Length: 156
Image (tube, rainbow, N blue to C red):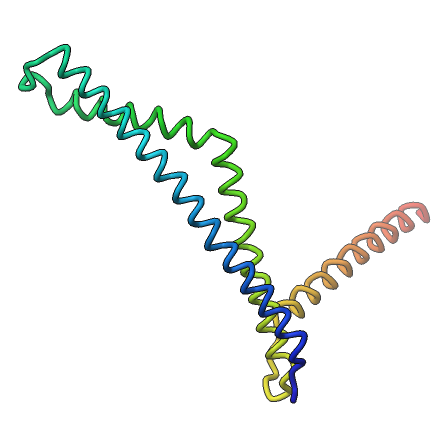
């Protein structure tokens, strides 16, 4: 066998765990948004009930006033929700889970595919390592060029 079953299985299971974490995060995120939507609709409904109680003539309610009340209520409610610590935490957890899922899936596929000599591909980690090395060499070249410029100025 070309591949290492224990290594790839461990990476696969990490990816699976992070995928399920991602699904839980999505559910929590959308549940939070849905609760915000329900609260906004409840507030809108109570405002409309109040308006009807103060003005029994429903024919006098214009579309502009209706849409203004609706949009103002939604804006106020969602502004509070989007600024809350719970929302930021939930969104951060979802993003963290998503990035973990991508990382573990990439690691799994790289481990599985690099073990097979019939697949001569260059993988992401190799490319990242290459670019890191190029960046380090560019820094060294810049330092050396600076030194040579300074030395040539000192010689004259």
